[in-house]
Image (cartoon, chains in turn yellow, orange):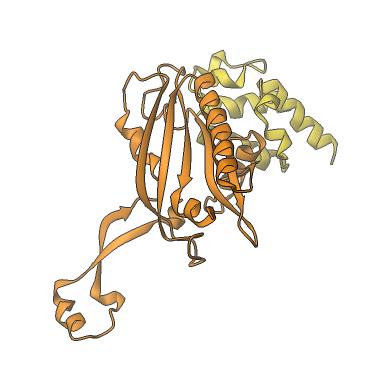
Length: 80
Length: 199
């Protein structure tokens, strides 16, 4: 499954809004995530791709949209 | 902080005579109750605000707080039983952020008047070590969600106050977020530590 699609799927599992409204361009803040759900999303992404986000990666401004997250995952995978 | 919780126990009725006779109290003599001593001052406020329509208010509380920290206790610095004065801001994100900044400024001014050498720095809570919790700590530090005021107290800096931005962590589960318009933040002052650093 392409990375974008998989990341959208992971976010959709924890989002409070209807899954069909979520796309790669959806803003993370609009998903109504609790802090615990957000942590679960990050853990799932890290485990799925065997990567680790740095402290800098986890700044709120780096997670504005799901696209931002997918791009960072690609960068981390490319850098391996 | 489940690993820091202190539970309450009492001497079993059939063991009272044994204890009165001057024998050491063994774990067999104690019955564990269903109650715990509070590990934080502000946590009791959030359930009390359930479904309230508050916005841009500051609430204060003072409580005896109990945290078991692997027996690493030190008089005036790391105690099992200590007193905390907390201020909790409930309101719009800008209001809560301004409240935290204002208290940081006021704390620095107070320390200057009292002659306490202090600095503010990003910190994180000491959660039980799991993958999820270490991520939570990273997120706290990366986003300055927890700032600590540390005093120079000899060997190592001593945190005497903390400024915490909770976002929707409490307002959402307790239904006072007014559709994601209300967040919370708190400032806690460890009064025993303040006494320890005031010369």
